[in-house]
Amino acid sequence: MYRGPVGAERGNWMRVPEPRHDRTRPRGWLSLFWGAGGKLVVFVTIPFLIISGMAILQQVQADRFDREGIEILAKVVDREVRRSSDDTDYYLTFQVPIPEYSAPIRVRKKVSSSEYAAAPQGSEQPVRYLRSDPRRIEYPLGDNRTTGRSLQILSGIAGIVALALLWWRGMKTNRGMLARRHGDRTGATIREIVERKSSGRATGKGYMVWVTDDGLRGESLDRPIADLERLGVNSRIVIYRRGDDTWWEGDVGPRAYDAGRVPKVPR
Image (tube, rainbow, N blue to C red):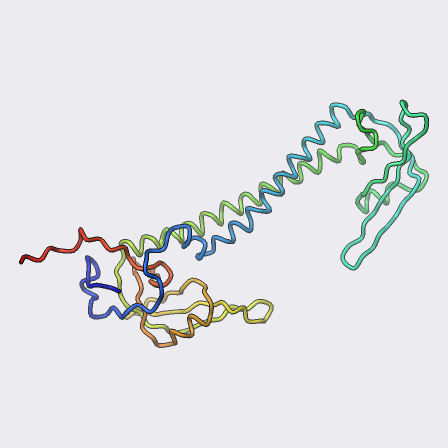
């Protein structure tokens, strides 16, 4: 429970309503970051890490083919197209004449549509096989290096997006922390409660829009719409204001109690 005006709150003592939330402690940075959209950073970072790992493995494979790959002409002995409701896959089966083997070996490889079209039945195509593992071939030549570079580009893009989201959401989190620590604790009136939708369907999550006594508009972080509807439109809530930035106390938590800022009362 709020115990009275401190610092910048003294002038607003009569305008500050009773808190209408269940937070009893200041919200930590990580918790606020997650609530302010930090999950988007995680959702982008995970693909970034996966793509980066794939790029590294692809480059390792390319280096291996450069070190021990042996180039040879292989005959296309079978072609296959597999279609599904979502995708179409193309396969070529090569007959590879390995000098160390008494008979050619057959290797099946998934290829792109353009690579499939460029390799008619019975044609001979240049491939590379590994001396230590002849059943592992590279087609077309340099494919591992090209794929690795493409994955590096995708990884770089995902990394830039993740950093941008981290900066964007981190700055928002910092503003909330600063507003709670140094802003003016005052009141505002709820003007609207909005439920978010996905593909036209209600998500059960939403936010509220408030207006301060001097007309400044603010929005809460997303939370269950039922929690917001219990507050109700036109209700008064407690906010922290720092400049034109306003935060609901239910999102950032109450300001930490600092006994050193309370004036001593002589006995």
